[in-house]
Amino acid sequence: MIVALVTPSYVPAPRGNAVTAGRVALGLERLGVTVSVVDLSQLSEGDAFRALAESAPQIVHAFHAFSGGPPALDYARWKGVPLVVSLTGTDVNYDLSHPERGITVRKVLEGADALTAFHETVLGKVADVLPGITAKIRVIPQGVRLGGDAFSLPPTVPVGRGDVLFLVPAGIRKVKNTLFPISPLGRLATRFPDFKLLFAGPVLEEDEGARLFAAIARCPWAFYLGAVPHDQMASLLRQVDVVVNSSLSEGGMANSVLEAMSLGRAVLASDIDGNRSIIQDGVDGLLYGTPEEFEAKAERLLLDPALRARLGRAARRKVVREFSPQREAQAYLALYHHLLGSRGD
Image 1 (cartoon, rainbow, N blue to C red):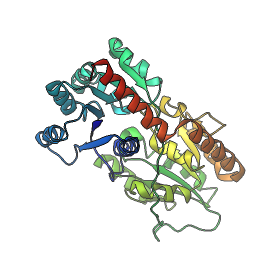
Image 2 (image 1 turned 180 degrees about the horizontal axis):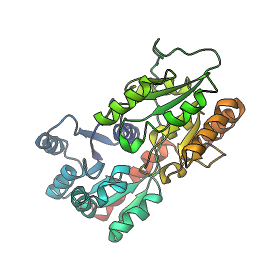
Image 3 (image 1 turned 90 degrees about the horizontal axis):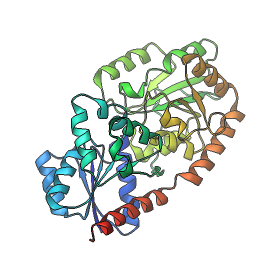
Image 4 (image 1 turned 30 degrees about the vertical axis):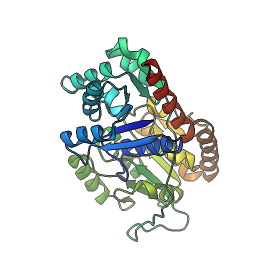
């Protein structure tokens, strides 16, 4: 079987779509599938179409309906092959209801043969706008796969014995709400000097990046590490104590949260659908709803290493049990076979 993955970005880019597409590609290849990747960040629209034609896929699978969907839909219609579209958080939480972008997203979703989502919570959001297409949606939870390259904290991050390290791994943009932890942790900093707050991720919105850098400049305990390559993320995660996800929305579940949990890190995350789909509050992570709750739970994690260890152990067990990359790839392959079989291919 030949499958073309159409993605807005691809590894080594440290972005969610790139990480997901790279993991799915590897998983499919290990199952004997021939995978062709069309990286839209590196190709013009015409070149992307030509790349699809050259690979002659039996299935086209697009990640991100707004960005990856249009060229994939055009090719699938031209060649008469099935189209699968994986829904992202931006698709369902913003673009689907946007007065302009929504036109493109709805066209792609209606034209696709199958849609995939990471969690059941996505179904309701799509049904609110396009109730007629929910029957096409398959829920396929994400897997976790991390690289083994080493990452060293730069000498500009002075880590002392006993310091507790908080990490925000996210692209710097408004929906990730990356500045949020600075204020509540700043209040803790006046009482607890033994912690650091680290940020790792590419600047995706210049205005948001400028705001973050200005805030960090006022906080001697906060540091920006830059865009850490995904193959080095496991090494970085192992060096920190608490991983923070402060997103305003997620597309079912965040790679960064699953990756942190897979390595037994304690996670403190915003109480949104995407994080509730992974974390049971107080069992395998902590969820917060207000700045005051974030501050209180961050203080508990700061002061109680046994709590961090207990949450981390439970988180790791959950990921091993429920978020296997092998199971993820097998689910996609089963969907492809179903679509081809329904067409008599």
